[in-house]
Image 1 (spheres, rainbow, N blue to C red):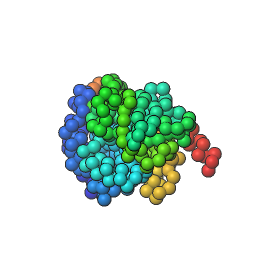
Image 2 (cartoon, one colour; image 1 turned 60 degrees about the vertical axis):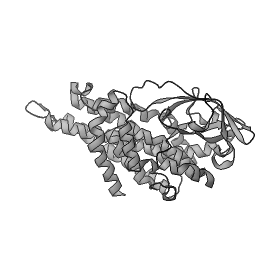
Image 3 (tube, one colour; image 1 turned 120 degrees about the vertical axis):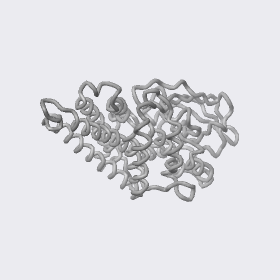
Image 4 (cartoon, rainbow, N blue to C red; image 1 turned 135 degrees about the vertical axis):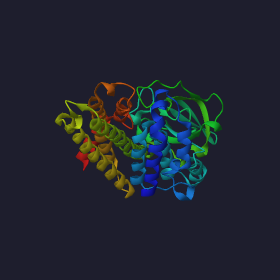
Length: 374
């Protein structure tokens, strides 16, 4: 697996970093880079080999997210929710659902997104209001979902909707393919303007009498959607933590190079203690965050519950990244505030890690509750 990680690292250095700034500033979807990721098999990272995927362990999976984010975080975002779709189907789908969806997901013929958050509720998953009701041998979905990555470029979504009473036990998950529903029943919203995370469209999806077949219900039984999606979010939080480490690492690498070139008072600024200490702190915190996400990934690989470790990794790594990217701007001085250097992009991308895959406020609550129960 080290060979695959090295291949991804070369891809980032040779193809991603030279083009990311222009694509990001233009807010342009990176079609060519996404196709290269498909050629490398990265859409199938979490899909078993029997379904045409790479069947990677979570540790390798997370390390690849770090490498991609070092080049451009948005590129890793294309694979993030796609990976959760693959996970939910792999772990909770019926044999027929796995055979139907996993091979095209692994081959990037289908590209996935997660329709979870709603306009009136994101973190409060148990109280989502989108509904699904039985209709003959199928289901009818109604409701609006918000902040969905891959809305426009993706073509298959895991949708969480209410099939029963209020609370977590009344939720179910469905797999919805754009091309298999009637026109006008699945409506894409206008892409949102964003501070960062550019190049990848994020918008709403509205389900208006959207009919799906009976096999769309993940696992074939209602009432398990909450558990299925929360398990998937463990993987999502590990990859968000890894992405935060990748962005912070890019900020450190750029800052270290700049600090050795920039001269003030007759010597490179890296020799000034104020700058040297910033670099030392950045490097130390990045290493600590990496150990946290790798620890969570290893627990997941061992088949153990990892919600505590994933929450800690995501919380620490995201806030570390926010600090590190600001430090990078300060090290670059006035140049860091311009769009001639990549550190301003890292700084704009960093806040997403603090709110995506569960806000840090929610994660602190998750951590505290797990500590009490331990």
